Length: 180
Image 1 (cartoon, rainbow, N blue to C red):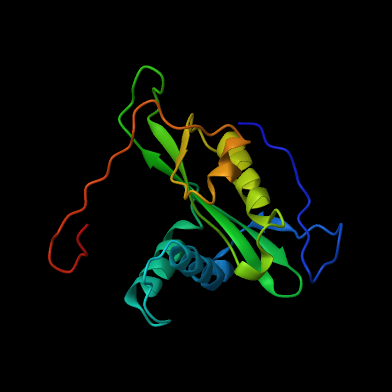
Image 2 (spheres, rainbow, N blue to C red):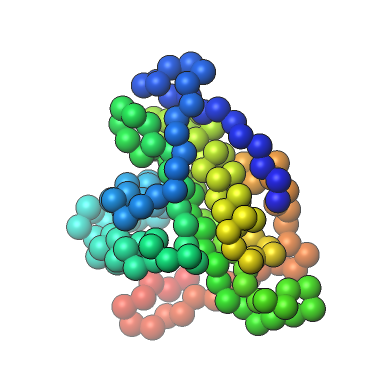
């Protein structure tokens, strides 16, 4: 996975000025949850109001995992408005196989940019930073992701391609969980 730095600009920093991308901390949890809601809404998901229970659950998830070494998030932190984009990566244990004796796989998710700051390279720079983290700080040998049609182009330049075997998903219908 090779990456190359790109300079993203924003209306508040001006042309040619890079918006810093850094590893997220627990102080960034409200922004990570806000950007997750924005991403889901753009995908047509009803996220409920600001007090929807999933938001607190997501905040707890980040609080438990961000300090560890198996989850990382990178944010574009604009000096004016603050965090305007993010990407999240997890390392997930899988059954080892011939091509991956360690069994640890990466998953890239929650790539989101505030609507006012899209198409400025912020998400791309967050993804590039996350891919460097996977490559330099974790033992994963493969990184998976799910992309929307709109976002798919972001992932082809760093080498993502459709998997050899398609991924399918089943949805349970237990009480309290939405069905398909």
